[in-house]
Length: 395
Image (cartoon, rainbow, N blue to C red; front, side, top):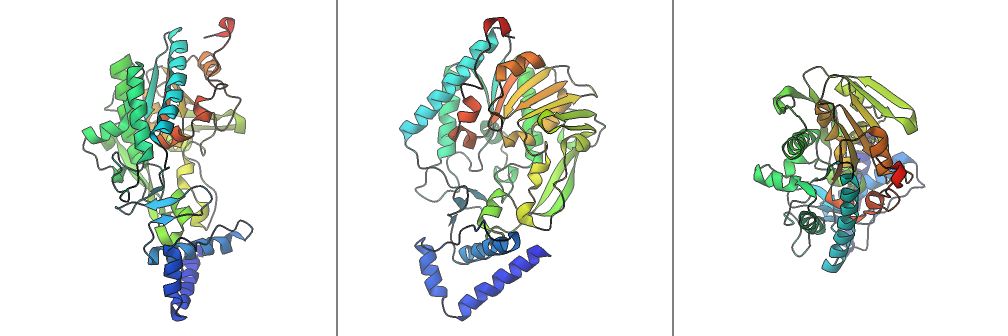
């Protein structure tokens, strides 16, 4: 009801502007990027959301491809209508420095893990923008993928295992856009299932970790509609009037599973099948602006999670350093493993990778990140998080 009210209010306001003959002036100011209604955090939610919706209608009516002045970053409409982050305008020198720092940190992790024979694998998730900047306005550089290309090259030079899922998408001829939500920066649960199988196959072929991929074949899963109307992170920034809404579908196994799911910092424990363990309700809300259904996966991206597979698996333990893209990848991957421990050091600066590897008895360490996480790498590759343990305390 509230969403329809927002659209009605915004439409009436827009028609009023047109009726007053002010449209030409509004179009000119918008085109010159002088007029943009900002977020008003001091307003009640309903009024703020109606204002954002109205702003989105104005921008859409005037053909704007970029929505600036949001709380986080500029939102860009790609040629195919999907919303993405406006790429950063960084020089090649800054990209090379960022890659050099990340690769140096990962080389240190690899060398430290080698003492105990524990492999390191970097899983690179795709960016919303396809490689080559497909869909970007003319003259705009694809910073995410340029940075990712440099990192993949440097990791190869350093002998660090890297599963580049962007490359696998191209090799399999998948439609890049169909892997993502139109209004959100994340990929879909169906894409997460595909990526889980790619990751399981890589770990099986490169490191001998058993995985029967027929168990997680797509035909053994079903799609379940969680919400008919979902407004993703970019849609909430640009406004419902600009982005429109879309459905949100989870992907659940048709076969029995049994997991234990623990978030110690929140005293949260869940157990049962796939949905009971990995999907949490987002609470009652009548507003698309307050309903982030992607956050229903893995309890909304906490800093430390322990997943135990009580229905089988290969008995191996993975320690995974991850961003939010992994939230839909790791649940189906957990079907193949005995235990998976997840770390997001951005949310808890006291976390230690090597202490977790030791305490959890990890058989492998994975970094599962999307290119945008490489732009602000301090949390994932910070010295404190990657500090080796003293010799008498090492794994």
